[in-house]
Structures are given as structure tokens and as C-alpha cells.
Image (cartoon, rainbow, N blue to C red; front, side, top):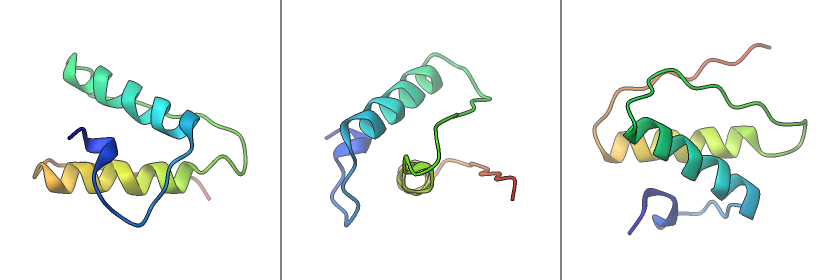
Length: 68
């Protein structure tokens, strides 16, 4: 099961799944600093929640920063 397909109450849209898959791919390639840029209302917070859930499940460290 891929990290994006993990059971939970969040249902991702296709473009959100694609963005998270790209993030996971880049992380596997060794890239450590990533930025996601998306328009208002595109579900960035949901994507961040899923990404944090994935990191917690793998016992990995992460930092999520948002400008207010």
C-alpha cells in the first residue's frame, strides 16, 4: 500500500494525489527541502495533513511552515 492510499477519513482529489506522489518521489531521490505552491481552495492543508500522517507512520521528522 502506498502512503497516499493509507486508510483514513481524508479523500484526496486527483491533483492532490499527484502532488503528494511527486513529493514522495522527490524525497526518495534525496531532496530534503520541498515547497508546494497551489491556488487558494486547492486543499493545501489537507495535503499537508496527509503528508504529516505519512511521516508519522514512518517515524520520520518533518516541519510544516505556513505564512499567515
